[in-house]
Length: 330
Ligand code: RIB
Image (tube, rainbow, N blue to C red; front, side, top):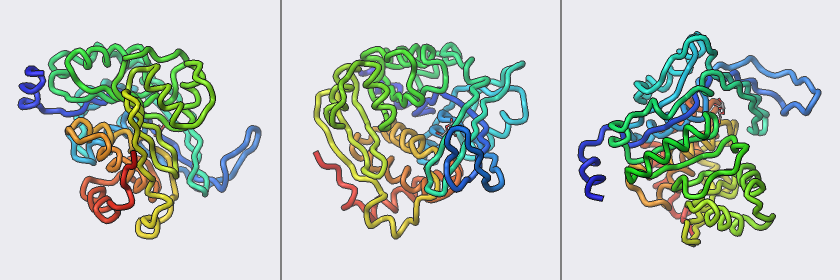
């Protein structure tokens, strides 16, 4: 503990994000195509994306010093994928440009309802390695945020090194890995309903109501669980079984003030990024969740992913106006 306190004084980066960087091609369509169907949409938008990059961007917009470790290919898509991160002030010294491999690419359809469907070609993301992060960097960070779009073995090896130093590790298993997660590998799991169902299936956890499944996950994986519930908010299930529920921005009177949901792409990334940033800053988990819910809700009111992520002032102002609605209940 003493060592950790000394490090905090010298800290430069509070949060390290180890994850994917993609270039997104986004088409707005009246509805998502079903198998075999072609749907005519609007003109395509080209956006920086990738779950790692989106989460790092959200955390930096929240105001937390962030370093992103990842990879792009030596092609024009890679440079464009980094543009918003550079503008936001994310430290990109841990991003490598790899020769002979393409940058990660995502094709995204966004329906008029705000729902989306995404297909990803990982490209350079498949070669990201934990050895790219040295011990001096780990000593400068209070938290690590990882996802499923880079090799899981590498992410978990880095998690092991962070936890050995006493840092908090947060995993957003998106997409859910094919092999079951080992118990005790991370401190926090941030999952949506689909990911919860897939993880429960891989661990042999029976069907059941959400709280029971959250408790099973927390017990089997020996970690805290933040389960997002879409329009119903999110559930915190702590390792010791204590739980808290926070409602979503949508569905409260806030809706009238902040506008309609137009695009949910990357809403989970915004939530994971802001939650991790707040935890890295030492904010208590329930307050971190409320800040993350507000940020994620606001990001759905504009098109785009990184482009739609709110800054700290807007998050704080929205939360201040609606604090009484976003009370976590035990
Ligand atoms: O979560 C949204 C992201 O998923 C997109 O930016 C896309 O690149 C994929 O990684």
